[in-house]
Image (cartoon, rainbow, N blue to C red):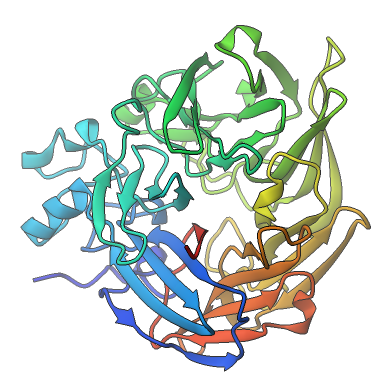
Length: 476
């Protein structure tokens, strides 16, 4: 019999806590009108712990669940499923948690070696549609394939045996060529000092893998590509098995290690032509976009002064920190170049998004989530909950926002009105949790007029727990 979740862990209780069901809901009740030219599926990936966890629990350690909103002909259907990874199947069979995903030294004795040998992980962070496959990623393990309609689990995907590392939660797709670029940190083993960059062609075949030694073992969440470069940031969130075995944090913020930015030419065959550049100490979970022109690379980041959510090497909290939109400038024409960061504005933001047809290219429009300051959080690292969607215009350097009131809002994804629509001409999709009714809805906005509010709201009769990332699959 399943046990109740601990009441003293905020990540296991409302609004972050899991839902204990899989379901389908046909023809959701709609307020407003779903645009007739919006046809496809929005996927949301996130943690949804199946059983009362072993030991301490963090949101990063939850079992993966995917939520799908199938949209077409003015109608929205919904389905959700846990991802049947090896960990999920073992614990489902046992009827209890036997594996601590955050601490390999705290597992049931019968599964003491599982976390060190597991290749499937949690599949709880992000999703991507590429090469006719829907993949769910967790970044510490291989991607996991699921059925795009039913969300039934298919299995871990190794690109026909060519992938021997994990896969980042933030692959980048070059819409001009169809190529997908991604990387894995600690590529050759637990806490190794390296990353591996992979390239996959439009047909979904892995064509190249480039091994890059790094200055130290680091957790690397996101990166960027441009037309001519791949930029991988090494921030000082260090990994240490020795520290973990001594009871310290496996991953910790060590600013004394410095920030090191790897710039690799897109056409490079190996790491011989890589340039390592330094910059002032900072951190970014996510990037809005990047592009290069005349040898100068511009990178737009949701930049923190220090890393949130991770302790210091001594196990102490790093304290509250907020991110702001900053542009990094990298002049590759300068043999003495370093990365220079300039704040574009002072507003707080996370989960930046663009019109993905312009990934790696010069662009104008960006969207993000933020807060209006009216909903307070119990998290020490962030005073406010994100309840607001923002729009940033790189041409006019102005921002617009829409507050969802007493609701938490997910990352907002852009969907073009058509394949050949101008940049930004389309829709913005976001999932909210109403903190009063404890129910979720899918909101649909005109992307360049978010202040007018949603043109449609598809209502669920349950909550979609806060997740991390999602993706869009256009209808066939």
